[in-house]
Length: 238
Image 1 (cartoon, rainbow, N blue to C red):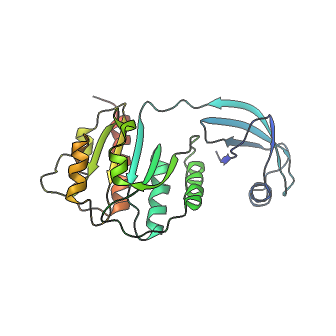
Image 2 (cartoon, helix red, strand yellow):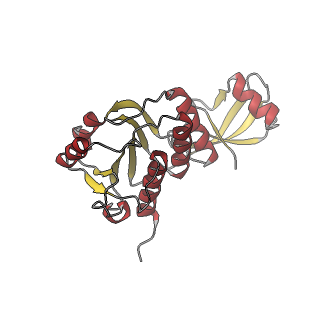
Image 3 (cartoon, rainbow, N blue to C red):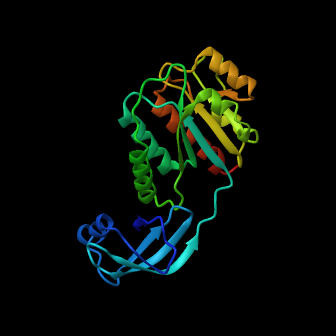
C-alpha cells in the first residue's frame, strides 16, 4: 500500500498541484483508473481512483472515505533542538513513524543555538506519515521557553515527566507512566537542564524519569521517550 497526502479533500473530486501530479503520474507511473489511497492528515483515509492522468494537474476521484479512530493516549514531546539541524530532522522523522501526537521545540538555559525551519520539519513529518501509513499528522509547535511550558495550566491533567541525567534519578519512564493517558515529556539540551529548571519542573508537579543507564544524545533521548510511551500503551498486560 502507498499513501498520498492532500490537505484539502472537501469534494469527491480534487486536483493535485504540479509537483504532486508529476510524482504520481511520471515517477510512479499511475494512469487513469488506477487505485490510490490518500489522507488529509486529520484521521481520514480516502480510497480513490485516478480520474485524469495529467502530469501537471492530476484529477482524483474519491470512492470511499474511512475514519481512523484516535488513540486513547496522547504523547507530547517537548525537546530542546540540537545545534545540528540534521539530527533533529532525523529524530522528528523517526518519532513520527513510531507515533507521536505533538512536538514542541523548547529553549532552556543551556540550549545550543539552532536554526530550524518549521516548514522543512513539516515536510519531514508529512513524508514520515506517508511512509508509515499514518492518517494523522502530529502537531508541530514553534519554539518556546521551557519555563513558560512548565507553568502552563493546560497540562494540569497530563502525566508530566522531566528526563535528565542524575544517578539518583534511576526510575525508568516505562515504570512511572500509566497507560491510556496524556503525557508531556521534557528533554533538555546536550548540557542538560539547569538545577533551577529542574526545581521549577518539580514545583509544577513534573516527575523525574530515566531513559536508561546510558547517557543519550538529545535526539536519541527524544526517540527513546516516545518509543517507551508507545510500549506502555501497546504491550498487552499479562
